[in-house]
Length: 138
Image 1: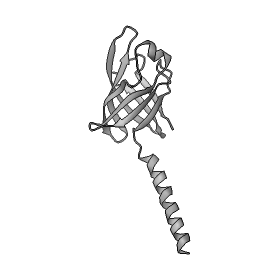
Image 2 (image 1 turned 135 degrees about the horizontal axis):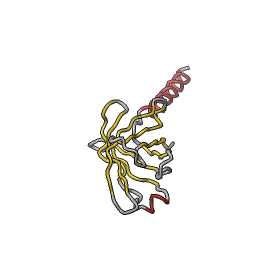
Image 3 (image 1 turned 45 degrees about the vertical axis):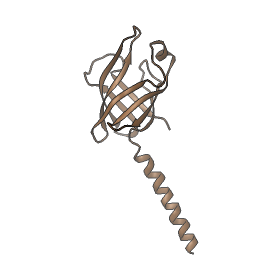
Image 4 (image 1 turned 90 degrees about the vertical axis):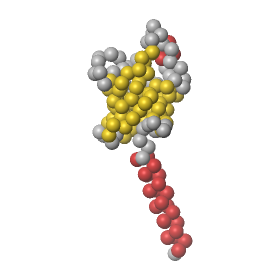
Protein backbone atom coordinates (compact mmCIF):
# COMPACT_ATOMS: atom_id res chain seq x y z
CA UNK A 1 0.00 0.00 0.00
CA UNK A 2 2.86 2.40 0.85
CA UNK A 3 4.44 1.66 -2.50
CA UNK A 4 1.19 2.46 -4.32
CA UNK A 5 0.78 5.76 -2.45
CA UNK A 6 4.41 6.68 -3.19
CA UNK A 7 3.92 5.95 -6.89
CA UNK A 8 0.73 8.02 -6.99
CA UNK A 9 2.44 10.95 -5.27
CA UNK A 10 5.39 10.78 -7.67
CA UNK A 11 3.01 10.67 -10.64
CA UNK A 12 1.09 13.65 -9.29
CA UNK A 13 4.31 15.64 -8.81
CA UNK A 14 5.45 14.91 -12.37
CA UNK A 15 2.03 15.92 -13.70
CA UNK A 16 2.10 19.21 -11.77
CA UNK A 17 5.66 20.03 -12.84
CA UNK A 18 4.99 19.31 -16.51
CA UNK A 19 1.73 21.27 -16.44
CA UNK A 20 3.28 24.28 -14.73
CA UNK A 21 6.34 24.27 -16.97
CA UNK A 22 4.44 25.34 -20.07
CA UNK A 23 2.52 28.03 -18.20
CA UNK A 24 5.69 29.80 -17.06
CA UNK A 25 7.50 29.91 -20.41
CA UNK A 26 6.76 33.54 -21.07
CA UNK A 27 8.65 34.82 -24.09
CA UNK A 28 11.52 32.36 -23.95
CA UNK A 29 11.78 29.80 -26.73
CA UNK A 30 11.35 29.65 -30.48
CA UNK A 31 8.76 31.72 -32.34
CA UNK A 32 7.71 31.62 -36.01
CA UNK A 33 6.38 34.62 -37.88
CA UNK A 34 3.00 33.67 -39.34
CA UNK A 35 1.47 36.86 -40.73
CA UNK A 36 1.36 37.67 -44.45
CA UNK A 37 4.40 39.97 -44.32
CA UNK A 38 7.58 39.54 -46.36
CA UNK A 39 9.34 37.85 -43.42
CA UNK A 40 6.63 35.22 -42.93
CA UNK A 41 8.25 31.88 -42.01
CA UNK A 42 11.23 33.28 -40.11
CA UNK A 43 12.00 31.55 -36.80
CA UNK A 44 13.62 33.40 -33.91
CA UNK A 45 14.98 32.17 -30.59
CA UNK A 46 14.15 34.33 -27.56
CA UNK A 47 16.39 34.15 -24.50
CA UNK A 48 16.33 35.91 -21.14
CA UNK A 49 19.13 38.42 -20.56
CA UNK A 50 20.12 40.57 -17.59
CA UNK A 51 18.25 43.49 -19.18
CA UNK A 52 15.12 41.58 -20.28
CA UNK A 53 15.02 39.43 -23.42
CA UNK A 54 16.70 39.23 -26.81
CA UNK A 55 15.78 37.34 -29.98
CA UNK A 56 18.15 36.06 -32.64
CA UNK A 57 17.25 34.65 -36.05
CA UNK A 58 17.32 30.85 -35.94
CA UNK A 59 15.93 30.14 -39.44
CA UNK A 60 15.47 32.57 -42.29
CA UNK A 61 13.66 32.56 -45.61
CA UNK A 62 15.11 33.14 -49.08
CA UNK A 63 13.50 36.61 -49.13
CA UNK A 64 15.37 37.47 -45.95
CA UNK A 65 18.70 36.33 -47.38
CA UNK A 66 18.19 38.57 -50.43
CA UNK A 67 18.04 41.72 -48.28
CA UNK A 68 20.98 40.83 -46.05
CA UNK A 69 19.57 39.04 -43.01
CA UNK A 70 21.79 36.30 -41.57
CA UNK A 71 21.30 33.45 -39.13
CA UNK A 72 22.06 34.63 -35.58
CA UNK A 73 21.34 38.30 -36.37
CA UNK A 74 19.73 40.00 -33.38
CA UNK A 75 16.10 40.51 -34.48
CA UNK A 76 14.67 41.88 -31.22
CA UNK A 77 16.74 43.82 -28.71
CA UNK A 78 16.06 45.74 -25.50
CA UNK A 79 12.90 43.70 -24.86
CA UNK A 80 11.41 45.03 -21.64
CA UNK A 81 8.17 44.16 -19.89
CA UNK A 82 5.71 47.07 -19.71
CA UNK A 83 3.04 45.15 -17.80
CA UNK A 84 1.93 41.55 -17.40
CA UNK A 85 2.13 39.90 -20.86
CA UNK A 86 3.03 43.18 -22.63
CA UNK A 87 6.51 44.21 -23.81
CA UNK A 88 8.32 46.93 -25.73
CA UNK A 89 11.37 46.28 -27.90
CA UNK A 90 13.41 47.32 -30.91
CA UNK A 91 12.84 45.27 -34.08
CA UNK A 92 15.52 44.90 -36.76
CA UNK A 93 14.53 45.70 -40.34
CA UNK A 94 16.80 45.49 -43.37
CA UNK A 95 16.00 46.91 -46.80
CA UNK A 96 16.93 45.81 -50.29
CA UNK A 97 19.14 48.93 -50.52
CA UNK A 98 21.21 47.67 -47.59
CA UNK A 99 19.73 50.01 -45.01
CA UNK A 100 19.36 48.76 -41.43
CA UNK A 101 16.65 50.24 -39.19
CA UNK A 102 15.44 49.56 -35.66
CA UNK A 103 11.71 50.08 -35.13
CA UNK A 104 10.13 50.65 -31.72
CA UNK A 105 7.51 47.93 -31.25
CA UNK A 106 5.03 46.77 -28.62
CA UNK A 107 3.83 43.20 -28.30
CA UNK A 108 1.51 41.18 -26.16
CA UNK A 109 0.16 37.67 -25.92
CA UNK A 110 -3.04 37.08 -27.84
CA UNK A 111 -5.94 37.19 -25.39
CA UNK A 112 -6.85 33.59 -26.30
CA UNK A 113 -3.40 31.97 -26.28
CA UNK A 114 0.02 32.41 -24.70
CA UNK A 115 1.38 30.65 -27.79
CA UNK A 116 0.55 33.63 -30.04
CA UNK A 117 2.16 37.07 -29.93
CA UNK A 118 0.79 40.18 -31.62
CA UNK A 119 3.26 42.99 -32.30
CA UNK A 120 2.63 46.52 -33.56
CA UNK A 121 4.87 49.42 -34.52
CA UNK A 122 4.73 52.16 -31.88
CA UNK A 123 4.55 54.81 -34.63
CA UNK A 124 1.48 53.01 -36.06
CA UNK A 125 2.67 53.52 -39.61
CA UNK A 126 1.50 51.37 -42.49
CA UNK A 127 4.92 50.08 -43.58
CA UNK A 128 5.37 46.38 -44.17
CA UNK A 129 6.09 44.71 -40.84
CA UNK A 130 4.28 47.27 -38.72
CA UNK A 131 1.85 44.54 -37.57
CA UNK A 132 3.27 41.08 -36.85
CA UNK A 133 1.96 37.73 -35.64
CA UNK A 134 4.23 35.13 -34.03
CA UNK A 135 3.37 31.54 -33.04
CA UNK A 136 5.34 29.54 -30.48
CA UNK A 137 7.27 26.65 -32.07
CA UNK A 138 6.53 23.51 -30.08
